[in-house]
Image 1 (spheres, rainbow over the protein chains, first blue to last red):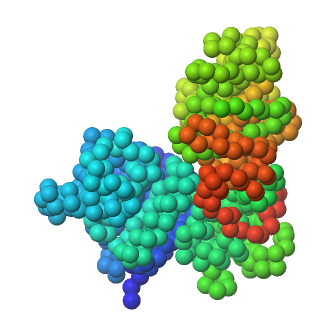
Image 2 (image 1 turned 90 degrees about the horizontal axis):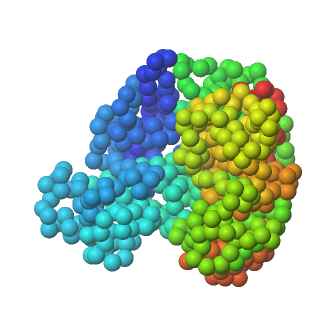
Image 3 (image 1 turned 180 degrees about the vertical axis):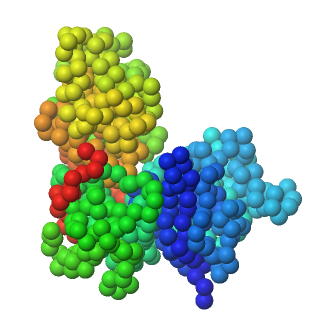
Amino acid sequence: MNPLLEVDGLSVAAPGRRGTTYPVRDVSLTVEGRGTVGVVGESGCGKSTLLRAIAGVLPRGLRAVEGTVRVDGREVDTRRPSGEVAMIFQDPMTGLNPVMTVGEHVAEVPRRRDGLGRRAAHDLAVHLLQEVGIEDAEHRVDAYPHELSGGLRQRVLIAAALSGSPRLLLCDEPTTALDVTVQARFVALLGRLVEDRGLGVLYVTHDLPLLGTMCDRIDVMYAGQVVERGSTREVLQHPAHPYTEALLAAAPRMDSRRARLVSIPGRPPVLLADTAGCRFAPRCPHAVDACDAAGPLGPGTSGHESACVRRDELEARSERGVAWR
Amino acid sequence: MSLSVRQGEIVGVVGESGSGKTSLARCVAGYRTATSGTVEIDGRVMTARRGPLDRRRVQMVFQDPYASLNPRMTVRQTLREPVVVHGLRAAGRVGERVEELVDLVGLDRRYLDSRPRQLSGGQRQRASIARALALEPEVLVADEPVSALDVSVQAMVLNLLADLRDRLGMSILFISHDIAVVSHLCDRVVVMSQGRVVETGAVDDVFLRPEHPYTRQLLGAVPPHPWSGHPPASPGTSRPDPSQ
């Protein structure tokens, strides 16, 4: 059986004055139906560009130059949106048009694409708002965005995303602007939609602890490439790439206060031409000469892949639970 | 509501959007006037219209350094301005003070002539902290200073704030909706809900043994840190850091 989403060797090019850059370079990944996959990395690692390419909403000037995106085995055009893929964005304040009511937003796609009548669109909107857990949906359907809290707006965006009956939901940091309690309810709602509708979810964030609570598998992205991939448990408990380890060490934790956080010096590189070797090496505390010739993602133990040339040492260290240098 | 911050202490204020955290911060910093009640710094009551000396004593760091730094001014100009306006150094010694300030926040001196758009998010937030420190305040009010930053950059800014407390004895009122960040950085915490303080105390007491149901609800929503591994060796040891 085909996976719900299959991205194969995708590269996105951005022509610029100083030459073409590649925000996404040779990325392959899959999402199964009824499954949630997390993509994690810093700003500028190409996560959002990857999502936009899959959704067919790349910003002007960017285009997919290599590779394919398949949904349910059928190739989709990365130059235009497809009905099977829906996307929700980071900022619920700017994602909604201030002069449209909630109901108009939610039913816009069925109205325009499927020619649904006014009455039916209204009923559909109420139904979808109820599905995403908005109480008093019959009244909220006529509200304007400014009358809603951030959490409610994010739910309205999900309802609108569901209105086209997508198979795949792409989420670009949807909870970054929300309170923790609202975030927890949002994550619970996503989990329910995955179960009830058999949705596949690709969830992008820089918040690793959050992914730990909701994803089956995690892809770690750095400088346009996937550098580590595995089950959530494997990636978070036995990171096999120094970048993943650095992201984990940078996140403050409740159980060890006052320790110094480990920040990652420098910032992700801009991807001009094809750079050989590991792109994280200039920022990596464990870099050795062999990194200059590092290859792509390779298998480690139990289907857990890493692009690090020292992945075996890293994994062995985390198994033993001792510091590694 | 009432709260106090001692010298050399970071007090965190947590609560959801709309709980009054930002209004509190703006009253303390003097950007808006309280309907009733007073703000005292070192025993001195701040009046509704603060004079220049009182304004200097509390400085604020904002969430979005891109919005709070003047995009047309270089870092040097941004830092010179408050020093000159408040007459804190003789004309010939202002440049020296500006260099001290960027050193203090760990921003490389070669960025002095950069404008905000040429800086990364972390560098911008360092520049805006340096600007707040330019007036030699006794209290810093930081309103969500790391919530717009990447986790790796956030770590840098949190370490800097901890250093300011430990090295300069700075008092900081730290507003955040991120419980893990507050737990990591702060000495004491104030939990706010609907404009009121519902619980307050040492971070260890409040977060390990919460008494108010609202505090428990907040803590229950925090995703646990998934990693039990050891922190890696300090980065940047084997190769020079390309950004510094």
